[in-house]
Length: 103
Image (cartoon, rainbow, N blue to C red; front, side, top):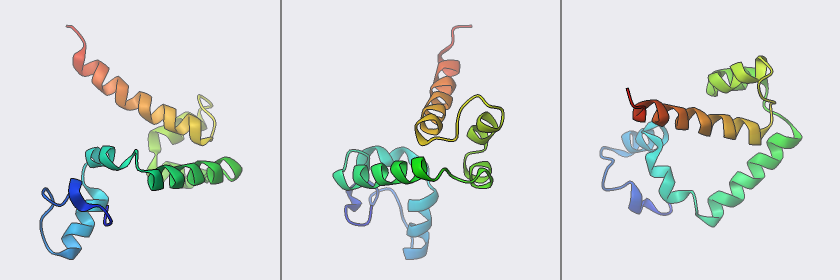
């Protein structure tokens, strides 16, 4: 985001500390602009490879991905990156599905 601020700079305001906080903790919709970037994809591939070889500790999952942690703990999914990613995507899709449900 720092090397290409085009997609966030018009929307985030404040001093450097506030901007840093906004880049880290604002809503994640801006990531869609950076996702296709070759550098981001390379780092994602490395992350997935590393987590495939050495799965994240359950304590880390419980802190940062609590719903996926519950699914791993309950045996609904494995502690593998592909399953964690798919579960997170499905969670978001279920939210939209519920919002669009005909009553």
